[in-house]
Image 1 (cartoon, rainbow, N blue to C red):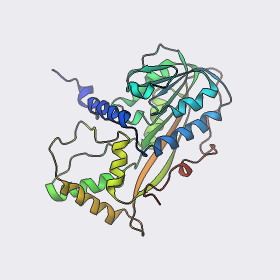
Image 2: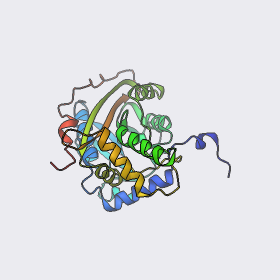
Image 3: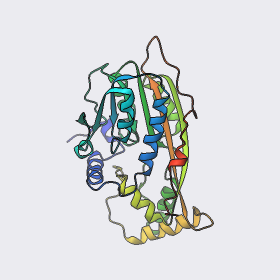
Length: 296
């Protein structure tokens, strides 16, 4: 089967992503939902600053629907959409669908929320263009993406260990969008009054293996198409854990893991627009919601 250039350039294995999400949905996050919980609280706070009600809203992904439930106080009809039907079991109104292919008519939605989903799409500009298309004029788009230096310590440790042992390295941590590129995406896809800001959070763990367990629980295992399919021994990960502890630990021996969360807001153009949300105007801080993952 021929592969077109757009497919060849796609970074993610969507079949593997679907399998990871199905496993994630089946067993839950097992205490690793801290990022999703914090982002849901932050986006809910930002939405509450918009002094208006919305007729029809959509949440894309959203794990357990916490953000959708919170947003329902401002939305007459709230729809949840996810690829995994098990995520939608308790949703009053839900659509099983792919976040890269919105099954909605043009100008049919007033609000779209995308908490920690768009950074794992193969065509993020296309996904955002579809969101803009589905929004009615003066409709609001709110999203959070992992970006910037997210998991930079883990990436550096795995690369260094693999290069040391095998003489080369395979990509094991996905690349993340930079803040300036996220802002350019909002403008490129035609959103008005764009607001982009970033919160950097550092979460601490006893070892690299605790971090990797949380990532697996969150469905964030390696799904890159360019990943190596060759099996590697435990030696690689033990050496990576050693390097991680040597290079990225605090005085108490716990390691640091960086998560950069980029927040986006934009409106579908309309002759009468609301003012954008001011960066830093939310009352709740993402930092307050994140806990020391070492258990102390």
